[in-house]
Length: 112
Image 1 (cartoon, helix red, strand yellow):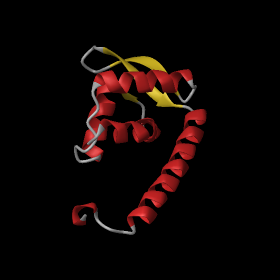
Image 2 (cartoon, helix red, strand yellow):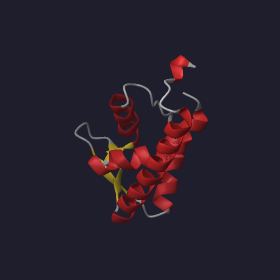
Image 3 (tube, one colour):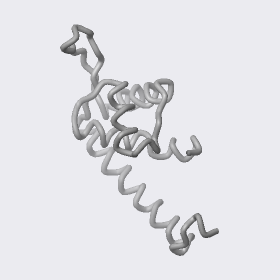
Image 4 (cartoon, helix red, strand yellow):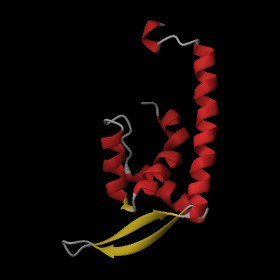
């Protein structure tokens, strides 16, 4: 998938995953792959700037937690402000999706 299209919804997708549960970075990457059936495949170099940006906006907070294997990981959790941002982004996405569908006229891309 073209990275420009991926960038449009990355923060929305990350917020949605964090709305489901707190996660550490690698877990976010794997869960996004699983839920999208491998369509969305983020690299750490893409994910962490998104997470840091969301943290600076107050949309997520991070905390350290020790896993069962004894490793300390940095987890991310959505805030109430992040939930509001997720709702805004979802509404923007719906407008975008509707506009694309109107222009495409319901034509499947494979039929072009």
